Amino acid sequence: MPLIDSVMAALATVNDPEIHRPLTELDMIKDVQISADGDVSVEVWLTVTGCPMRDTITERVSNAVGQVPGVRSVKVDLDVMSDEQRVGLRSKLGGPARENQFTQPGSLTRIYAIASGKGGVGKSSVTSNLAVALAAAGKQVGVLDADIYGHSIPRQIGATGLPTMVEGMIMPPQAHGVRVISLLPFKQGGVNEPAPFRGPKLHKFLEQFITDVWWGDLDFLLLDLPPGTGDIAMSVAQLLPNAEVIVVTTPQLAAAEVAVRAGMMSTYTKQRITGVIENMSSVPCPHCGEPLDLFGIGGGAMVAKTLTTELGYDIPLLTQIPFDVRLREGGDRGEPLVLADQTSPAALALISVADRIGSRPLGLAGRPLGLSPARN
Image 1 (cartoon, rainbow, N blue to C red):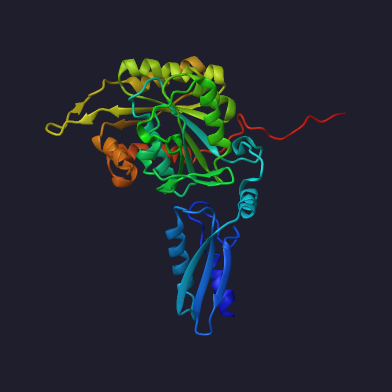
Image 2 (image 1 turned 90 degrees about the horizontal axis):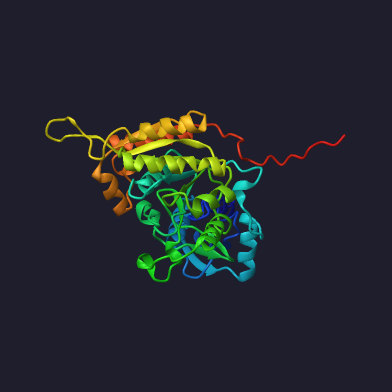
C-alpha cells in the first residue's frame, strides 16, 4: 500500500474529541504532504479560532500517523475553517434547521428527568453519578442542567470548559465521557451571577439547550430539574414528552411529602415515573456498627408506595444510597464517587440504578411513530 494511503487510513481513525467522528469524515483534513524520506506534514482545519481541543487534536494526529510504518516524523499545522465550511459542517452534523432531535420518530435516546420536591436532597449528585456510571458502561450520555437558577452539574461532573460555537450550533463541553450543557458558560459574570428570569425565559433557555446543542447520537439524556413543580417541569413535559421521571428524596418525612407532590405532577404532564431514589439513608456507626439514621427512616419507601397507590402502576424504590461524605466531596472536585471509589456502598447503590435503567428496553410511550391513518 502506498504510504499516502496508509497515512490517510491512520487519519481515518482519529476522532474529533468533541464530535467523536473521524476528522476525515468531517472534512477537517486540509492537506497531507509526504517527503521522500517519510516526513509527513498534516494540515488540519479547526472549527473556530482558539479551539479548546487544538492540543488534543494535534496529539491524536501525531500519534496515529507516527505509528504508520515508513513514517519518520510528523508535523501538524492548524488552520481555521471559513464561514462556508462551518455552515457545511453544521449541515453535515445536524442539518441547517433547528429541530428537537429527541421527538423525531427515529430517536432512540432514553430520557430521564431527575426531580425532587425540595432542594438539598442530593438530586444533582444523583444525576451526575448516574450519568458517569452510564458512560463508564459504554453508553453515549448527555446531561442537560435544567436547574437554570441553581445550576451545579458542570462542577459536579468536571465539565467546566466553554462550549464551542459552530454557526449557531453549540458543541457542549465534556468530562468522563458525558456531554454537559448548562447556563453557567453563558453568564458573563460567572458562577456568582444570578439568573433573574421568569417562566417564558426559562422555557426559551430549555428549548435552546435541546435544539441548538449538538448532542450526537445519545443513548441517554439526563435532565437535572430544579426542585418543585414549577415552570421547568411543565416545559420539560412539553418539549420532551417521552421523558420519564426519577424522584429523589431523603428518608426525612418533610422531604418525602414534597417528593410525593413532585411525583404527582405526572398526572398533569402525562409522564411516567420510573422509580424513587432515597438518598442520605442510614450509615453504619464507625464505632459500634449500628445504623445511624441521620435523616430519618422510611421516606423513600413511603414515596414509592404512595405514588404507586395514587397513580395506579408499580413505582419501585430503585435504591437507598447510604450517607457518604465522599459523595459531596467528589462533586466539589468534579470526580463523581462512582469513579473515585466504585466499591463504596453509596457508589454501588448508584451503579445498580445505572445498570437497571441502562438495561431497560426502549418503549414507545410518548413517542411519535410517524404513522398516518389509512383511508378507505
